[in-house]
Image 1 (cartoon, rainbow, N blue to C red):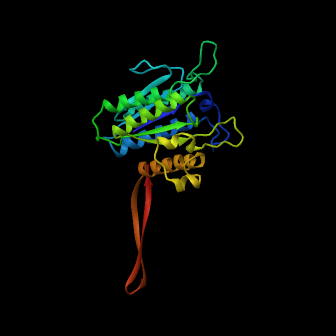
Image 2: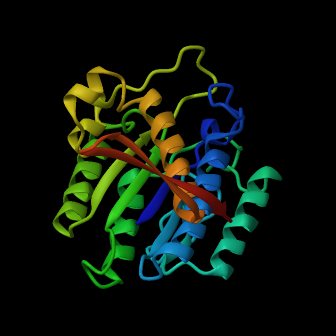
Image 3: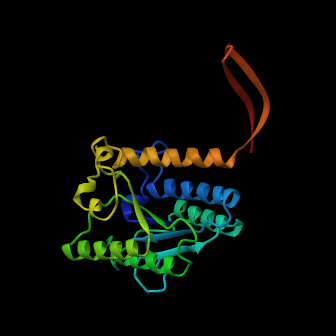
Length: 251
């Protein structure tokens, strides 16, 4: 499983639209840290990776500008958790910035190139050995050009042929008073989603907040072991009874 995170300027700004009012990238990294800790505890065979695009750093085997492979797909361990915390602190200190030209004007890396690098990461590891999924976090509703649209669709198809699913996490833009994210503009062509959920707003921004919250909830549930302290049986009728168990959460 690989987290692909858009680091354009609006993703790095404090966001009044999320509960903590932190930047989108901060929120994502915290979720990723918890996700890693859970995997260390619950499934030592899972592999996790973290890739930034649209960032000032370039760190990848294809020499693509603005794409940084911060964690290659590996089984998470204590050192990787420390590395993510280091990256998180760099974000807080403003040392990881959006991609810009020589004059400091924000520019965008190509999502298609980021997906090509993600594909290369998955090809390095044994197929079907773990959950092959990309979590894509962005607040950009569609590519900037028709050429890039076609390139992204092509790379998404390559990932699909590799057995890798893309799941979109639509993020809000802090500069917009009433942000929206219309998946039908583009991403509906490369990710699978339920049309009924889309109509109910569960695929766009509201859905992302719910899914991140649910993800963190599931992580906490899995991290915290439960120890049975007692049982109680209630007889409703000679043929029917209800049993209760009392737990203590062990962290």
